[in-house]
Length: 138
Image (cartoon, rainbow, N blue to C red; front, top):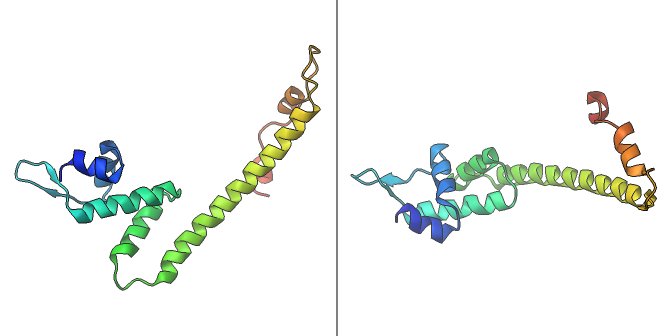
């Protein structure tokens, strides 16, 4: 298959496929003319990578998962460990977003939204700058 066909079948842009090849996630064969010659196994790997990226796995996690996928002597505990670590990061991000939402909802509720100039949203933004490194670590 050429890159156009594999792009259509994997639902990945050709640019992404070239990038995955550049960083060594896939290694399609090359024809004598230098064109990529994708095999069914390459298509399967691209679908695997596409799904992993949809789930938010980093490129390095994808590299690890692909290596585990290709290793027939792997232990599922290793795969689970990668997934659990990613799940923890997702949970932390959800908690952060929920906290942000709660704060912003409170500020919106406190703002009269009328023609007066006072605004608790702007006051909060002006008085609560970015967290200091020691605060961010807590």
